[in-house]
Amino acid sequence: MFVGFKYFRVVDLILFLVSIVLFSCQRKASNENLRPNILFISIDDLRPELGTYGSEIAISPNIDNLASQGLQFNNAYCQQSICGPSRASVLTGIRPETSGVFHNYIKFREATPDVITLPQYFKQNGYETVYTGKIFHHGDKDDELSWSRLPAFDSLDHLPKPVGFALKENIEARKKVRLEMFAKYGDVARFGLASGVAYESADVSDNTYLDGYNTTLAIATMKEMAKNDKPFFIGLGFNKPHLNWVAPKRYWDLYDRKKIKISMQTEAPVNAAAMGLHPSFELRARSNIPKKGEINDELSITLKHAYLACVSYIDAQIGKMISALEKEGLRENTIIIVWSDHGFHLGEMGIWGKATNYEIATRVPLIIWTPNMPKSSKGKTTNALVELVDIYPTLADLSGFEIPKHTEGKSFKPLIENPDLVWKNAAFSQFPTPALREWGAYPIRPAMRETYFGSLLTEVEERIKKQHGDKWNRVLFENNIMGYTMRTEQFRLIVWKDRTQPKEEPLFIELYDHKTDPYETINIAYDDSKIVDDLLNQFNKGWQGNSQQIN
Image (cartoon, rainbow, N blue to C red; front, top):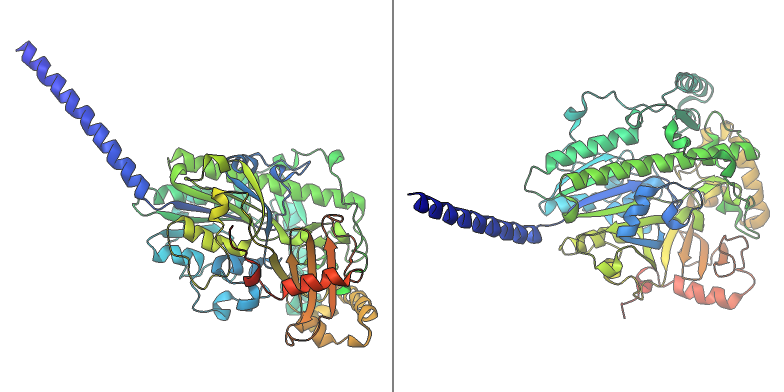
């Protein structure tokens, strides 16, 4: 009996082990056939001020770590350096020139009502899609066609709601300035004039502010979605380092103020377009910032410190999100992509803000990690020219879907497989007359001229009139001129045209040689007509004619 019992125990054990092996094989085969999850991380106003991009001061260990595991794009460009148009372009796969979304107050569904967005496309293909934070721009963010469910709000009932300011004095200051601005200027004050102070350092938890709260919400939502059989698309959108620059004190404390360097390039490029730079409208709308004149060195250091603190705050949240993904056992089947909607001037060229056609405003960080990327590509960088409009076709391609025909980008999946491939000849961006647009790229409202910005606008207009003489026309310059910029490996060309008369000659041209002038300090367009003519011929081929075929 004992021998027989032992024999049956051995047989049972063998059968049990065989069943485990079979189950593991089946699960492995099943996992290999699964569509990848997507963790889609967007960051607002982040220029490549990161350790992995060569910043001498930014503390960003989590983004740096992701780059060390994935592929970093050194030459990625947005299609317009303002939130609404840039995000609409990324999420619809359509360039601003096609959609007509040129400022923050045009809803993409009004401009392109039938377009299938990136999350909508994944939703149609069986994905659970959800977002927390800022993915689309405000006003578009709750697009019901794009999202299949709401975040797991119930799981955060134990947390206080996030705040814009944590310090009592800043909360009171914002209330006070709001009352003053509306009393003085009326309804136009709601377009940014009552924004409060520019920065805050408070000894509070990460969840006190919106980005920490939204990360916690994204993690809770991801855990819920992990229980389902469907693959998921999670959009986690960070509001910082967009103004106002508020971050918990511990992130401010990471930096030694004495080591923070301010920009030495405090003047506009020589011979540049007078309409190409704004007078820092967005920053000056904050109540503790001078309304005109220079931003002094002491304040400039504080502002850059605030920006860097926000960068580190966001970096920590990204670390938490990726760590949670790993703890749930989902990392190995999840594509992770991190991108920013545009860059930002921190005093460069004498201005603060985005909203220009220059390198500092159009170049963005872009990093991707995929489960199946070759080992030879992990931790590599590529100098290929890519555009944010390429993200939509790339994610569709990586997930095994047909790339929608309406998209105007190019899948960079081949670059993930070989970062050294010959790629695009040029990247394209655009922005309408920055000097005569409000900070949302909206044409100057008449009522805005009656505010404290009136004198700044007068100064800007005088410079434009001086440069263009009898070509000056307020309707033309405020509403119809578009700056189109083309970035090649060596040059940045900016062509200022009346977009209602596309066949007419440009009103002004700028050219910067990045081989000799990487900070774009001198416009050489009128020094070498041969180079300009060659580049204009290339420019006139458009994005279609510059998407070079792979060799």
